[in-house]
Image 1: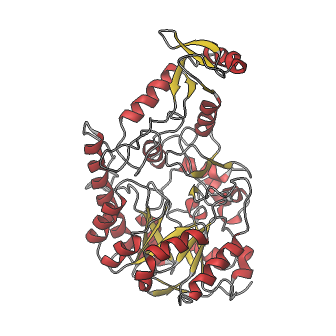
Image 2: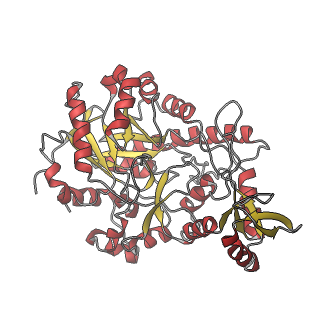
Image 3: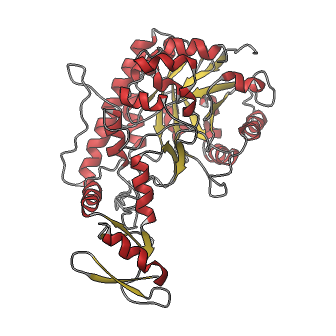
Length: 468
């Protein structure tokens, strides 16, 4: 195994190991501080981070306002307060070592305001900001106002080139690194383009080498590329070390830190991760962001899948293609569906899926009355956590709407991520994970976790540095 050399990140030489930023409340100040204390880069999530009461208990993010716009202001206030709290915790835990980064999502609601609020309220405590989930053109300008480094998360050279030409070339001195996130392997939301198939993964090496070539062409030979998604053992990446085609390189670990003592996720989630099998994490497109995402194939995902499977095109009046009449709802209103789907629809209704809900694509899905009420309540309770939400049709614009009908095939992402992070059911919530998470089952470092004895972050870093 080649030696794993330090790399310059956010103004300091550190081990080339970076904690992947996982929101909501999954990468926090405690885990980030521990990574920094071990001479690495710790990353806390700046997406609706927890703040605490005088007893150190997380303050539940309860929304009291009547309108979405008012609840959106509550959400921003929670996020800024939480981000500052996590930055302070991370700083204290770092013992002055390593670097502390904040992870943000460009397509989250109010991101610009939240970044401003946290960086202003935690001056000097945050050394870098990573940002993905979209095209964060303004990230460089935002970071420059506070003299912190910025780290765009991209999944292709094409995306980085667009960012560079539009904005980043003006702030090259604060470009701390480029995070290449493998869109087929990373957990959470993935940056697959419309030209790429979700079921045809590509080798990350030539894609990263292309980014390195471009960085060298614009005089940024010293700027590291950070490989994210699919990283487990560094021994598997040995040919990337001391490789001129790759250049300065660091590796981001998202899944492995989940099973450490400092990880804030509930024990029930940790135990579930310990027992995954290959294929238990899948790519899907049910997220209200419109992005593909990688998550556990649990009951929550299965219900979403079945919801979309009970779907047909429809019309209020018969057409050449929609000829079969079906009565739906308590009032028995007529809709017309394809003749070859009539038997399916009648079967769904007979099995209790009696409520028909219209989608923005002129289709109907069929769900139970209880599920209908839950979907409508979640849509009505929207607090604007995304810049544009397919599920609720909220958008962070002057009209506060996407201009499309709300989509009942999706879900309230804020609700489910808050619930699972704070002790809710792993089976009945959205549970993000990287595609290599099945390796927990055989990774020697974590086997004592079956008795509740998980390693701490320092032990994980020591193990990573051996290549294992």
